[in-house]
Length: 239
Image (cartoon, rainbow, N blue to C red; front, side, top):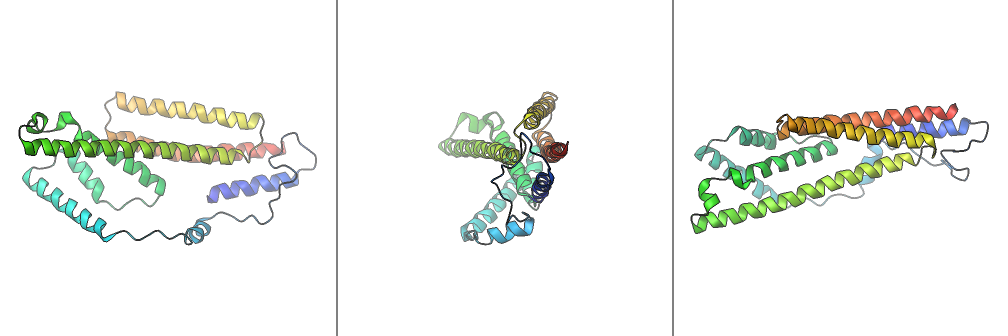
């Protein structure tokens, strides 16, 4: 938000300095910037203070404690595999500060859980549903798998939609001419290259963690590259 505000201020001041009409102004003549303020972290904090989140129900804490106890019991009865141990360590760390990073971490952990829940990785007794108890366990695992897949899909769609909304919003401040077209083309080309990198990691046998480490790196690259591109093109307004 802060970088977007600085970019907005730069573009606005550039527009005001123009001494002759141009074919594709960033802002139409009737638009005013009076009353605009920088959108900083403090500004957003004050804004969201008006909409406090409801407290977490007491049952959530109790459920989390119960799940950790069950996990400890399972670990004592059957030591974790390397994949399970990695997931247990991930669940024990302090959550990331950035909301976006948390979303990527949630996706990674959901995929790790889905990998472990895959029918081919279940004990033979569960696969064969040898007893009524086994059949009940399988039914529960299947329900968990279905819900996790739905949650993962919704989170992916939310991130894609949010990225498009941010991009389109910023593009409204750019000239609606060849410069805007170039930025869009650059973004499309960059996304194709990023997908090719992910496909290469998967083809090389990379783990889920490897893939998401790359995805998060790409997200940071995407953020800085896009803002740099917009800034460069905004400078061309003076040309």
